[in-house]
Image 1: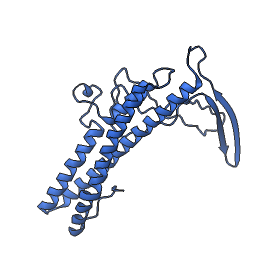
Image 2: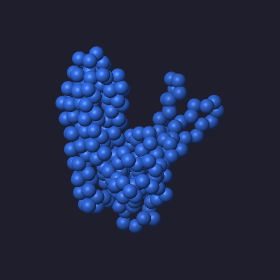
Image 3: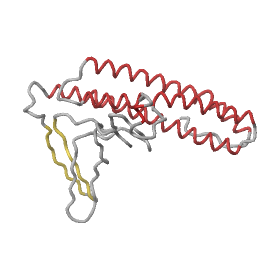
Image 4: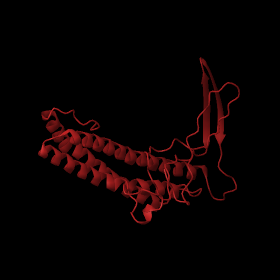
Length: 234
């Protein structure tokens, strides 16, 4: 995933190694990253998971039949004047909601691309002109939904200068804004999230409608032509 220079840097998710001897695991104090997909480019944003708020946590290690647990605490930076644990809990709650919506958006892109790849495969093997026409029309409609969720024209980290970012990028960037300081989320941030989330729901609804109508009809045509149905409509 390419990012501009001012985007948050995101490394791979930390994993516990199982090599013989001593193993060290360093947690970045963040929840799991949002879902992404190959080749995704975001502008001034990332799929980084939300930061864990102050509170009590527990680490559990299991090896074979042996399990050991140890509690620990995350504390807020006491040098930040005016910040409270409640502020950071509120920030985390909204950041986590946003991250989940980023995952919803990216899952939809993956689903659309999986369906389009299968349609392309069927059309290569099709000889019926009406079947090809229906398949191409369905691909166009799926691409229209995809294009509202993700800017699929992006090929490099500088392309967002020419092509406007879409819903998944706007949501991911909003998470970065919400987590930019030790503060309670503003009313404006909540309002923007509500708007973006509603717009995403409308696009997901469009996708479901296409799957339940045009894709279902296309699958019936494929069955008549002796070709397997498109999967991924669930």
